[in-house]
Structure formats: C-alpha cells, structure tokens
Image (cartoon, rainbow over all chains, first blue to last red; front, side):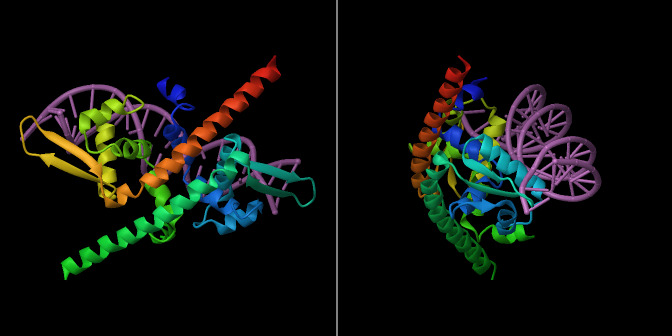
Length: 120
Length: 120
DNA sequence: CCGGATCCTTAACGATACTG
DNA sequence: CAGTATCGTTAAGGATCCGG
C-alpha cells in the first residue's frame, strides 16, 4: 500500500530497501575493484557463507539493477559480476560509509575502554 | 564467532549492522532537524507504524549510541530524541545517500518507462 | 564452477492490551 | 504522552541435496 508507493518516492526508504540485505553492502564494496567471479566473491566475504545465500543476494542485486551478471559460455562455467551504471554511482555512498564506519568503530572502542576503566 | 569479531573491525559490516533496522535510516534523517518528541516522530514516519515498533527502534538506536533520549520529568510525560555525537557524524552519509537514492529512483523510472514503451 | 530447489531456523516486525 | 509485555506472523538467512 503506502509502502509500495513510497518505494520510488522517498530516497531514504528506497535506499534502505536496497541495503536491507545482510550482505548487499559488502558485495557492492567487493565489486568496486572490478569484475569478480562467483567463487572469488565467496572467498572474500568477511564471513563464511554458503553459495546458496550468496547466489540469492546476487540475484536480488541483479534484479534491483545494481549489478550485472556476465556469463561466459564455456566448460567449466565462468560467471562474473560487476557494478552496473547506477551501481557505480553507489561508490560515493560506500566511501562516506567507510569513513563513518571507522569513526563509529573508534567510538565503540572508546565506550569499551571507558567501561573497562570504570570497572577497575 | 567471526561475526562478533568483525563487528568493530570492518566498517562496512559495522555500518550495515546499524542500518539493518527497517526504519533506522529514516529516524536518523528526521532527527537531523533537531530534537523531536516521540509522537511527532511517529507522525512524520513515511508509513504508519505502531508506537511499539517505533519504541523498539529508538531503543536499539539508543543502545547503539547513535541517538540520545532526553526525559523531562513532568506530567504529562515529555521525551525528546536527538542525535548523539557519533550520530551527528552520520549526516554526511545521509546526504550522499539521499543523492544516490534520488538517482536510483530516476533509474527505476527509466526502466519502467522503457518497459511500458516496449509493451506498446 | 555456478548455481537452483527445498526445508528449517531465526529474528524482525506488527497487533493488541496494559501502565506510570 | 510515552512507553512495556506478550504473542503471532512473516521474511531473511542458512543447510543440504541435486543439476547443467
């Protein structure tokens, strides 16, 4: 209802929907280095994840138009993923997000240290 | 396990964790206008949501250190929420996210239009 | 090598009712 | 006004097995 209408109207709601996937952001980040193959992608993920999960996330991102899937017709199969045009534009978001993420990590460390010292 | 360790190490994983909440981004956006009361916040949300849900999201954000809860001791009760220091730093993310969100919306419109014309 | 199909578990979300 | 407690629902994620 209202949700369906707002998707495509409010930039925050729209962006959030895309970033909802647990791995979407990290996948996009890995793709900023250029085209990458499925297995390589899986290896570089920060956590172990089954290919089922990765496959699903990739398909979602592809359906959303953020990434492009390139299938080489050969045996053994080879598939590469790369950022689409609109996906490329996401780089800026990733870079500021990285900066903030590190600031937030520093903040968390501060909190932890404060708690430790208080507990002494 | 690995997850617990990576939270606080990788800026993307960390940031994603914070943004996982369905409303977190929009709440932070609404707070960029300054302190705001609970009910006002609920009214401004893009979708109808129960105060139960909003309350939970606010508590999560507060626990994560992104927002600050200010309780005025009076009858009737008055509570305001505002960005914390690290929350303030999130403004930059929001602004680039807004830009990208609008670009993505434009892209989606393009796709829709193309599909319509092809169907003619 | 790169998946799809299926089933299961979990956690987010939402609805309702109640409280200081 | 601003919540909490509880419960039901649903969607995302993960495990396993099968296929081109």
